[in-house]
Image (cartoon, rainbow over all chains, first blue to last red):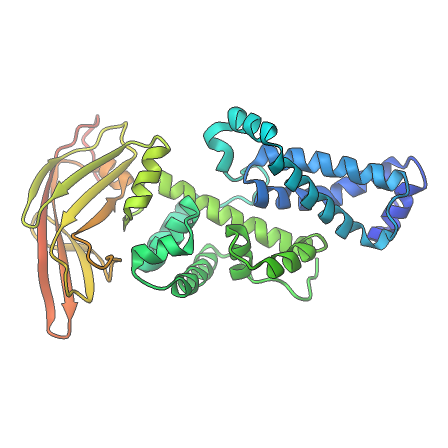
Length: 181
Length: 192
């Protein structure tokens, strides 16, 4: 087993020719990051997985063809490819309609499989222990991803206050759940 | 993993909600593509958001909700059982296995109230729970309270009294009292 390569060394190694171990390392290193990006921007686990495959394929093609001018900037290249690919996905209405048809109401459901496990009963206790306004902000925000303006209107406070309450409530939930940091 | 400048939960939460400014978002994404420690923290944040979302869908939280929230859950196909009571009103109520959310609409004149508490009492009038300083929109003529469906589905026949109270320097003032006569319609005797 060879030492862990830097991003630049990895890019160079893949560019030198067929190296399954290096390509596997690229997948291991970049796939979780791409998936996270995809989940954030596409709000769908399957779409995020599709994006991951698509971006890794483009990255491998570029590396094998020696098209990456600055190997040390591998992560930036992958991020840039993610951004372009997500824009393409959004522009491609046919594909979007296909996703909607395929996944329907689940399109906005967050990913489950690769998220850390959470004690459901403990979370219920933690949410219930929040102050009323904090609970309203957290639930309205995360259930429906309502905008700060909607929540502010319901609570009769400013958007800036909603943001402060949300931050405080998130920190309290993390503390209550024993999440470090 | 050893991130020298970890992003805090607040920033990661804002990123997940899409409310970071464009510049801030770009900086964070550049960081996330080189830092698996912050990536792990973002996944924790998503799990938290996901967990809260699931709790809301299960109707197991006791809380005041908005009309927009109710519309959204109904759009999602969840079954909402609602009871609407005027101040001083009573209702015969129950829950069935098909119900997802249990809602009480409590009408009251809340004009001028600076702080409103919701007091939940048993049939003898003993306070069992108080939700202090509940969110009340200016000009609102009712409070939309969600009772825990877990609690309601486990309940035997019982009586519950809710009171909306206004609080100010002068003390506590009753805005409205609402009595719920719950009849168990689910199999089994029930019991908390």
